[in-house]
Length: 409
Image (tube, rainbow, N blue to C red; front, side, top):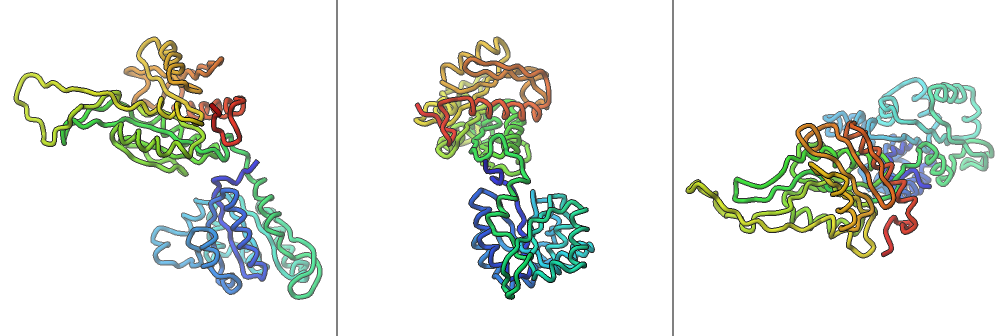
């Protein structure tokens, strides 16, 4: 199974004739869903242009340690923290020597020293340079520091020599890169999540809303991304930071959330509806602030669109997970909601002064056809991870789920 999906890989390119292979390597990594950022040494740019690699990677290519614009935000540190893996291919004898001595006089070596990500090195050099004792000493130093050597390969070289020193072919390097990562439970799946409250305007300064903080939905988005999924999060107005590797789309009203969710659902395999969407909205929104003129104010409320039911009813609908937040008869209401809306799974949680909305902890009951599991009070982040695991298990166990994760109805 593909383990590179949604992984962040820095591809470091050094000055070597083998640098031409980096174009195919970049293309292959991106084809498997990896996010590739390229860092080149100055000598590498003599063999292949940054413009070529920018076109293939879809990102600006980094070459300068003393880039005034980047360094204002500590560019090499940001790159180092961004990476899940650093792959140096090709790695010249000179770069290996500088890296083994801990020098940081160029961007690529600075990124390597500043990162905690695994470091893989694909040597490329003349066979005599590879055999030289200095090179072998440098290789030993780097392997003792947990760097992984990929190659070199043995064969004819550009200079006419024959022997070890050729950079491994891109296919072999890509296969090796996949071994660095465990397969995510939702690797390759596209997950759409709604979170937070909605606000239904009464007039320009007032609205109807609820106590939802979005904490559970954001925790689920973070857990799904950690499981290898491509995550889109549609959020109502909340004060939560966007989880890493999650695409966030902000809305305010139930109608806005419904419209965006319907648009995004066509490209998702799993839909998780954690948002506390308003069931009713004012039938008319006053253009001007309503003045305090009488003892009573009567508002006519109309039903909003049922986002969860709408997506569950789509032809070829995604695996659909609903939430039921109740103050009483929790499991009865949850089972009724799951059946009436034809959901694949429902997550029931109690709400009250110390549970549910705007709390860091919760308890969950997860129900599906023929199954039920209860989780005692724990942090929402812990519960989110457990929920994602159950969803992955149910998808794998469901005979109606095809390779894309979509239902046949």
